[in-house]
Length: 253
Image (tube, rainbow, N blue to C red; front, top):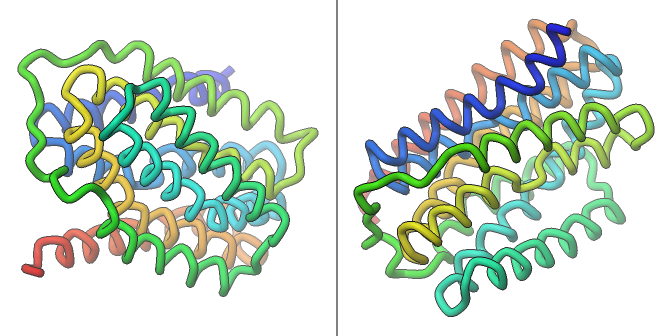
């Protein structure tokens, strides 16, 4: 019962917190905070608890390899939203994610290569977003939270329940399915416009360096270390990487 409540409650609350940060500090900061492993982290922890450390290590590697696919989703949505509504933008972004995810599953890069590829994408691709996204401003009245919170709960529950019949790398790939990107980008585009949505997604991509650090260290440590210290060290590494990335983003170009 406790695990079920964790599944249904933790991720939606984290989504609500990121949304509140966006209303207070803007789209870029909300996206940057959303780039933390606040969905993949709890999902991998639940997988470790229910399926074992070895399964969670392989799932972490699958999530790490899926980072470029999630970044591809963000780029596809941001550019499509400049000319299309949220339905076409979401479909285009999901197609980009599906193609990239299929390539990841077919390729299955090992830990060193997956880490290098994730770092390269998280550091280089934020520059590829629409140039005018920095002018975005939020409107005065926030959109409702219920839909995005529900989506986060459903994804967490679906991935952890399906882990018994799915390969670990597929579970890892699905744990990084862009649910937060989807629900927040759609709500933001509908409420605040395409420029604000692009700024939000750009911030998420900048912050995903912490996901790379978290998943890479977790995949490396779980085979030889107990779950609690492994998750503790991975979380600390993610926060350090996030802080360093924030300092890099503040430096003048």
